[in-house]
Amino acid sequence: MTLISTLIALGLELFFPHFQSLKERPWLDDYLRRLREWFGAPMRSDGPVALLVILAPPLLVVLLLQGIAEGVWLGLFDLLFSVVVLFYTLRFQQLDHAVDEYLDAVDAGTYDRARALASHWLGDPPQEEDCGARQLAGVVLLESVERLFGVLLWFIVLGPMGALLFHLSWKLASEGDLLSEEGGGSGLREAAGRLHGILGWIPVRVAAASFALAGQFEAAFQAWGEVISDRDPQRGNRELLSTVGLAAAGLASGGSPLESEAPPDPSPVRAARGLVLRALLGWLLVVALVTLVGWFS
Image 1 (cartoon, helix red, strand yellow):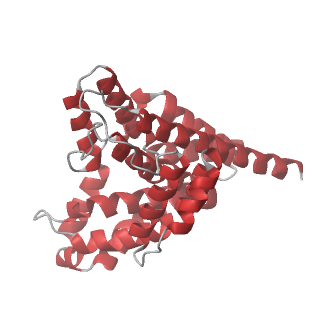
Image 2 (image 1 turned 90 degrees about the horizontal axis):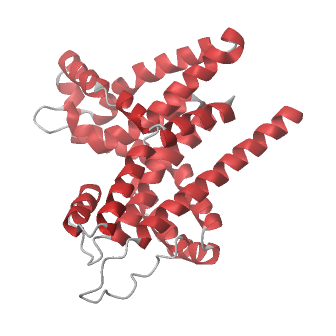
């Protein structure tokens, strides 16, 4: 059931972009607003308590439905529920679409638009003369765990509840200030960041190993050995994945500077996305193999 659910949800995510609008309903914003109205100051001041109050209801509902769905309609309800939750928590199509827009802008020679698109994902204007291609390649690798691999791994381990837990921890870690009209909520963001760093520890390392196997293996593992561990799990995860992923994609060095008249080269972005897709194929093959062994054992 896990393999079938994963294949269907990934198919919807990768090949049916018009379904993405179904994910944009701002239920989380409304939910946080209601909690703020009900609980008041504790929701703004105590990060761990706020995080528990926010996560417990939706996770318990999903866990309850998970249990109810087992065996209903010969497992069809379980399959449908798993597909819906997994599809909702996946966010790779947004990243893939952004990559396509960036590549189209560079190929069309509209470099100002390419830099603007890169700035949206980098958070700052790109520092490189190639419209931020190498920087954006690093973002593609990092975001692939947040939007794809981390969700898939926790779905495989804990089912729909695991996928939702990882997704919400990422969302709250990046948008925890939604809890306060004054732009506060830093305690929530910090607590969510710690939780997300813990949840991301295994997916990041599995993804990094997958990148190494799908790319330049020797360079990737040499880079892995040079990474210095960080006490902050979220920052350490990002450092490891970025370093190993760029090495696996053949982008470990900054490369030679561009000549002033040379057009920007978007190949690092293409290389990073290709590496992510090859790693995803490897994950699916492993899940399929494990499933087949389970069926015939």
